[in-house]
Image (cartoon, rainbow, N blue to C red; front, side, top):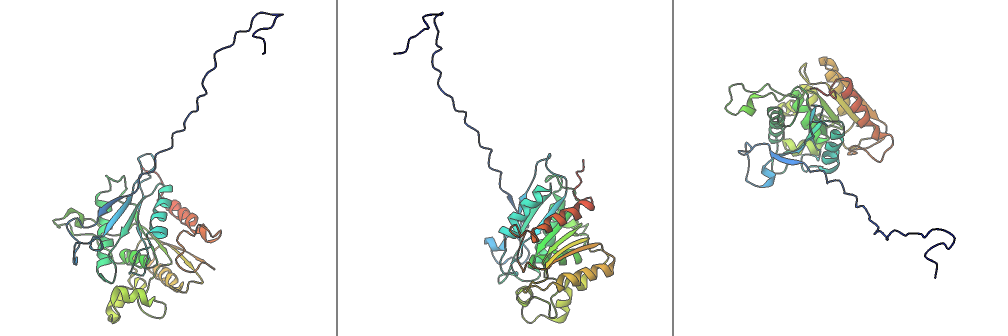
Length: 305
């Protein structure tokens, strides 16, 4: 047994053994998910029932006062007007916008076969008005509310920007008194035209039916409806897109240019269709950065008091 003390020196007093304390790290709380808001609390116009499919909603990705810069974007996922790509063209996009300090709203609009035109456009216009009407509650600058759409959602976004109105000042519902015009647009591999060889026939037929009249095709072709009041636009497409040819973005860009509307377009050589934020592609994944640069240059990401 070892001695308790050194015989050639003073006794050694040992401190009693202390229990080892393992500090438990507190896990940060899980971020709250988006809240859901009915676009039409009293029922959508032309609703065919009371099911979830009959009730368009907004998933609200809000930010704290410290995080937010005041800009907001209404996100329209694609899906050919028959379904909604809510993951990579909805939730992921909303979180990217949040990372820029932008409040995001993902629109679940009505789709075929249960609904066709005018239901999706009614929902998008109403959603734009709703965001503006409740801007103070969501810490949003009502003069910096944009719209972003992918594929068929790009068509919905572009036609919302081309065929907007200021609202009815005498309407009983205060939301209907607010403008539906987006302040800017972001269109990613958008369906633009409803006529001619560059349209996506499946998307067109789901929205308008297989026997749509020429006048309706013209009214819903965004390149034919672009005007001086159409918002500034950022466009992204892939040269090798076989589903929605890049000519869709090119035609809209040229229509905006003719109308004197500011626009920026990026066409990547490879990417196909439906790439979303393209997180796994080292080249294509640059488009969100280019888009953020465009927004920053326009003052959309400036934090306002």
